[in-house]
Structures are given as structure tokens and as C-alpha cells.
Image 1 (tube, rainbow, N blue to C red):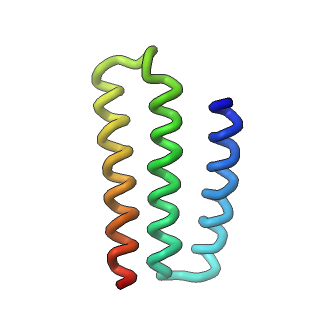
Image 2 (cartoon, rainbow, N blue to C red):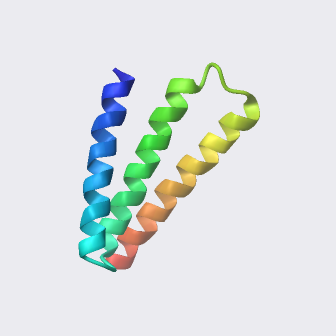
Length: 79
């Protein structure tokens, strides 16, 4: 199930990257890319949470938070 979710999110991520390549400096697309990255990191963290060390768990949390914060900042720039 987790693999299917990751594949679906990865396809959406690749579509957004191609769209960003064609339409440069679009804050909505950049924000969506960051949010999708946050979702992907969250899924990866959930999948490997039980086998990870505490340092790796902290790194996952930091990466997820930074991705979501960057995404929301990009959306805020749209206004």
C-alpha cells in the first residue's frame, strides 16, 4: 500500500517539476512542489519509522517540517 502511495505522489511530483520547467517563477507551482516533497518525506518516514534510529527520526521530522514551511511560504508569496 505504501509503495502505491509513493508512486502516485512521485508521478504528481514529476508532473509539477515539468510544469515548473515550462512556467518559470510560478509561486503556486513551487509551493505545490514543496508540499508534495513534504508528503513524500512523510510517507517515507512513516514506512521506516520503526526501524530508524532516533537521529534519523529527528532528521525526518526536520525535513518534513522544512518542506511544508517552504511550501506554505511560496503560497503566501502569491497573495
